[in-house]
Length: 102
Image (cartoon, rainbow, N blue to C red; front, side, top):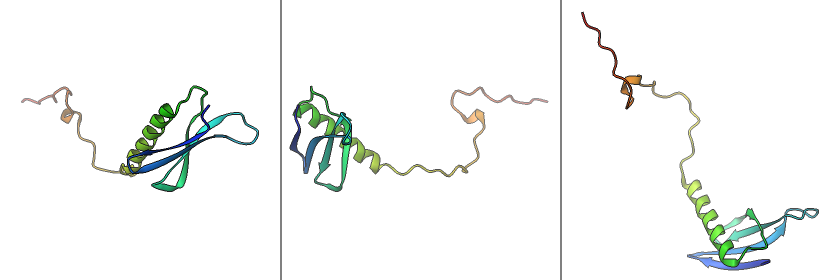
């Protein structure tokens, strides 16, 4: 099993290593740091004996790119009041409202 390696993806350098979750545990996880994010360290998935540098690199880059994408999204609004709901007739596919005749 690979224990650690480093690779460059674009302008980012990833430093990866396998570590146990705690001193008594036997589970090993892939941890990585990114040169553009010096304050954080990530452990996105468990290490496996079948892991190769190529497979780990692809998974780490995909994980980190998805994380950056999620961070770039606007924060969800928790404000529940808003514009009043539109009547069902305005919704596509809704049955037309009955017309009153005299």
